[in-house]
Length: 416
Image 1: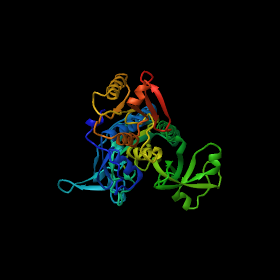
Image 2: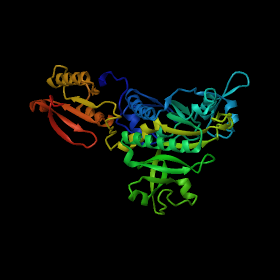
Image 3: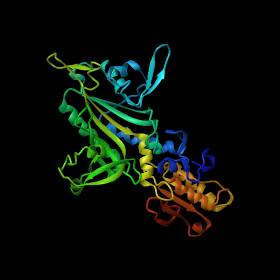
Image 4: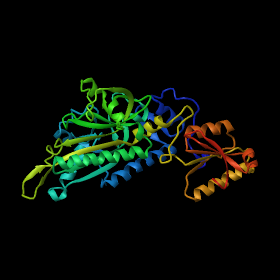
């Protein structure tokens, strides 16, 4: 990618209307553009990172046998009436349609996936299984905030599982739990992510959130000190803590440490909450019918973009780990014309890297100052920055900076 050809631009000025650190950095770096409150467009660099997060999630869902589908974004009012959520779901977008019809813009897909599965599953032989999608969701948030962390339009992965009994659901729930651990490990967030106990509502005793500790996190969690001493990252969320349930559900310990965090994922045991209204049943080997038990497992793809931005950034800009970066290398030639040796060497290096299968950004802008180029490289946050200048060429090499650690070394062009 040549920066001169990128239609977007960076900005050195903080965004006055930015509602969070992630909104400010992602906007200044040209990763996102704010359409209106709670709604963002993803620009070329931001879309690359978003798709990489999506692919990590997709690979781990496929690894546990998830079957990918894509469900409709619109649904009929009648489906939400069946579950008493047409009026009961506060953040539901409702759209008038032809005649007396009304549609919902789906914030979640239980009302769609349950009747869908009913048309295909009827026997114990059809169970268990899980299907998932990665799709834009819509929530009529009364006060959108925190940049891409809490918007009215967002990208989410939602997995739904279907089971003949509680034992099977419980086992699959733990399988997804481990898959989520792997996802957060691959994203570089594992050591700051806490498996957080939350209310299960009318579904079960507990649901669970994957909360990432952040200095400006939008939530408050209470970390179990005893569990942490045992090498476990366990917490309870503020609602449970304020209800007086101040005993760690894993260790029984009563000592907690409050942290700010942002939720990146959650998992629920739905039981028969949705299968009963839609008459989703299976017939066992003896011919008797039972309601199918369900589980729901969500990950905010666009939320994770914001979480990773805030988790890794420093005062200069973003710092992307290798699995998520918009490009592996950011090449900065210090040159005034295309005939300068540094410019020619930078072009040659860029072409070699691309030919070898690496991803790279080349700052080929001749009008930009050295300071602007270096500041933009820090703001965009690729893992490696390579500066080629007359000074480095005198030493037959280039200056290589590790964005995450700040380490600077001189290396030969052949080594690169």
